[in-house]
Length: 205
Image 1: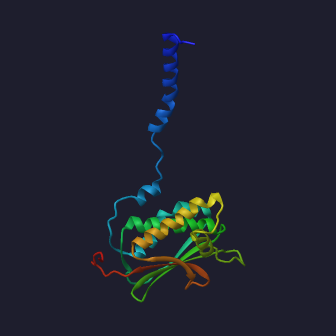
Image 2: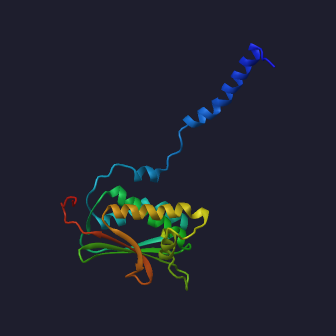
Image 3: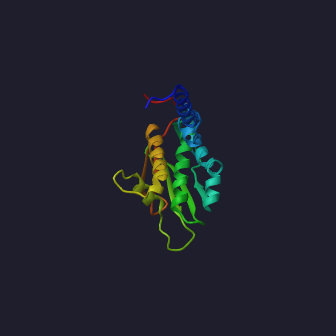
């Protein structure tokens, strides 16, 4: 059956109108993840005191810690613990560790850090402890389970795994290591190791 010009014109208009919402949706800006933006920000590495970066966790991670009912306790050396790093990168790595700790620990627990110098490296131990008796550290176990590439995880833990991988990737870029190991604070915890940098020292080739 041959269609009249008026019918053909009407069909064309209907198809055009049907495509408008799809085109608008494609052009609509998507919400930006602030942590992802910071991770992609330009890197400006310089000498910094790791003690200062750790002390700033109370401010940068305060909202997460408060929401989870987790306290933060630092044991820092008396002398500077210099490393070569971008402050934003290091802050982002610490935020991912805190996020993991808040997920692993029960309310009322405490995330402890112990910073020191060992064999030319700046070392930080992260240990979770609960005020409830009989609670075993959970941070290291959750880190290992999420990091294991072949270990199946629940769909809702996908974002947590992304946090683990981001923290590892940042530390690797800084020439350091982040891994689960027996902690100097007792029990299993997370250990961060980075090369010590003398004040004024530039990036190593």
